[in-house]
Length: 87
Image (cartoon, rainbow, N blue to C red; front, side, top):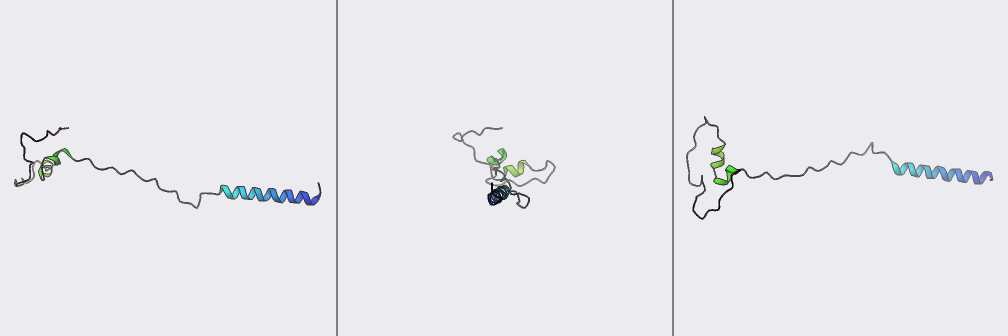
């Protein structure tokens, strides 16, 4: 092998090595992409299904101030109303 051929082979090997190292790269400067958290919809509370203010009155403190009863606090019950499953 001549000296010129040897220099060409060494130069091409150095270029291939540099290209390979540059392709690998480092993630030290890159910030990781945050994983999105799945969103959950809150399940409707059982006591909120019985009327507008029933759930608030149900969760009130036992020694708290009593709230006045108003129309719409309870859902009207009839014989044709679908039954509600109690958990």
